[in-house]
Amino acid sequence: KSQDIAGENFRIPAIFANAHSYGGTMAMSLPWILGGLFQRARNPLETYLLGAGLLAAGIGVFLCGARVPVALAGLMLGLSLMTRRLSVPGVVFLCVAAMVLFNMVQGEERMQRFATLQDTEAVAGRIRGSVNEHFLDLLAEYPLGNGLGGGGTSIPFFLQHLLYNRVGLENEYSRVLVEQGVVGLLIFLGFVLWFFTRVLDPREDCYPTRRLLWYSAAITLGTSFIGVGLMTSIPGTSLVFLAIGFASAGAERGRVAELEGEGNDERWHQTDSRVSA
Image (cartoon, rainbow, N blue to C red; front, top):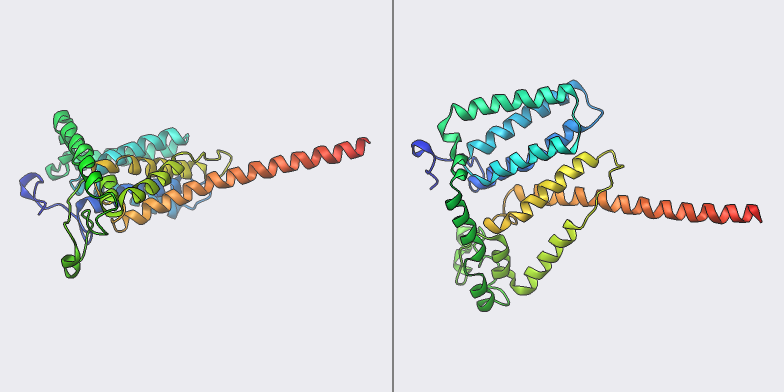
C-alpha cells in the first residue's frame, strides 16, 4: 500500500508492520550504537562492528521513505556531537560515514522522500491535522474510553470483529484517550512528565550514553502527537522504553549517591565533633 516512493517503488518495511516501524527502529538504534562507540574500553573489532551498524542503520532510515525517522536521526547525530567531545579518529570516522551515506542518498531517488519536509505548508497542515483532529469531540464522546483496539491499534484479523466503532487517528495521545479514557491519558501524561523531570548524573561513566538515550526517548515522546505506534511498534516500542529505563536509572543512581554523600558528610561531622570534645 506504500507506493509513494519515486518510481512507484514500495517502501522497505522488511518483516515489520510498516515502513515507519522499520525506520523508527533504525533511528532508535542509533543512540545505542553511538553509546557503544563512546565507551572507553573496547577492542578494534567492536569498533568496526559498531561502525558498520551505524552506517546500516543510517541507510535504513532513508530507505524506508518515512520522514519522521530522518528528522529523529538528524537530531540524534547532532546531539551526539554536543554530548561528548570526540577524538580526532572519532570525528574522522563520523565524517567518512556521513559522506558515504550522503553519496548513497544523493544517487538514489527513492531514498530522497524526506526532501518533502521542505514544503513547510504541507508539514504545518499535517501537524495541525494530527494535533487538533477531533480531540475535544473524542474527549466528550469517549470519556471512559472505547476499549483496547478502538483507537486504531494493530489488531489481528481474527479479532477484528470484537472492535466496536473503531476510530482511526494519527496522534498517540488521542489514541490513548480513545482506548483508555481520560484516566488512562492522565496516567500516561504523568509518566511522561516524570520522565522529563529526571536529571542525569554527569559523574557516571555511562553519562554520555544515558544522555543520548534520554534525548532519543524525549524526542520520541514529544513527537508522538503527529503519529501512532509508540505503544504498538515491534520492536521499536521495546527500544523506546528500554531507553527510558536506562536513562532514568542513571538519574536515580545519581540521587542515591547524593544522599549517601550527604549521610557520609553528616557522620563525618558527628565524628569530628566527638573527637573535638
